[in-house]
Amino acid sequence: MFKKVLIANRGEIACRIIRACSAMDIKTVAVYSTADKHALHTYLADEAICIGPGPARDSYLNAQAIIQAAKGCGAEAIHPGYGFLAENSAFAKMCRDNGIVFIGPSPEVIDRMGNKSQARRTMMDAGIPVVPGCKDAVHTSEEALAMAREIGWPIMIKASSGGGGKGMRVSTSERDFNETFNIAQRESLNAFGDNTMYLERAIINPHHLEVQIIADNFGNVVSLGERDCSIQRNHQKMIEEAPSAFIDDGVRQKMMDAAIQVANVVGYTSAGTVEFLVDQDRNFYFMEMNTRIQVEHPVTEMVTRTDIVREMIRVAADEPLSFTQEDVRMTGHAIECRINAEEPENNFLPSPGIITQTHFPGGNGVRIDTSTYDGFEISPYYDSLIAKVIVHGANRQEAIAKMRQALDEMVILGVKTNLDYQYSIMGNETFKSGDVDTGFIDMFQKGEV
Image (cartoon, rainbow, N blue to C red; front, top):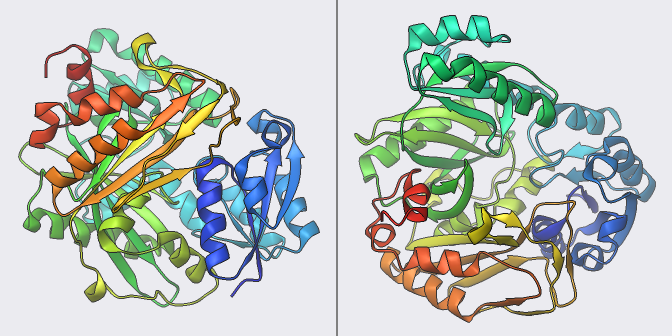
């Protein structure tokens, strides 16, 4: 097992990884930008190293500075968390070339699954159901339009290197196609430096379900069940829960089997998430694979009583998984709400500033993942996530009631937040019924549900 791990991230996920390492008696090293000098993860870690100025491109995206920090402090491994360099195959390769273990899949697998059009081709060849669309990537609006005419509208235009909803647009007809394609391609270039796009038939208001898997270097692949991530705005997830209230055990097992097959096809190791779109008839289609830990991993941990970060570290240290598929039991229901510094009434405009006072709820079945404290500054340089509130109940109804109580008790002063917005969703009758898809937030905003 490793003696020292560097965490190439910040915020709540850095704190989460540091705590997992500490429980395993592993020394930890935090990296931070000048804007994060007083961030919580720098205090929790055994060591902290400044890697550059506030802008992420000069610090948390500065691969060379992170490698130098790891070598300088003697860290044997790097955990990338999510975002930043977590799915950057070049960074994973830099780690390997410098004799440092990257806690995640190999750079080759990241490449294979990180390029969405290549991943799509791989799944089609393996017989995994995918949304109808093009098999090959496109680079110009002219060749894309020719393919679109074969697929039929509405069409989802996606960045091959995409993630987080960037470079993703829906064309409703041939009239808007060229403009929509060009907008999506510009977004892809700005966000990922890649103009490679691909097309899918748009499934209007599907359910967005993802299956958590974890695999070791000894051929063991285990599925930890699904999460329902249908509550999202502009393809950005807001609320996640496990298990999904939409599918039955038969569909669930087929999705889990498909996710395990995906992992086997690409030779996957470490934790990963296979994402599916599910239509109203409960047909599911492979969408993409995230080759990293997910923001919403705690809901899976709550219903399966596992520690996904711990297992990632064990796998990276060339140890087998500590459990088998037969050991996995999904018990009860878990929900996660992301609490952000933003203004829902002002088109969710970010609200950076200093948090003057906080009170976080607790009690049986309530978990708070955060890096926030009184006096902490929500920086304009980074994501506005303040905390993740995760609850676990015996069933979905109990979990919703517990989340309403937790959000009602929670206090965050100094910045505007989406706390009241999340609370109102928990009280919405359509949400409580479980019949929610990716179109819910638009309808909720308009007062139609």
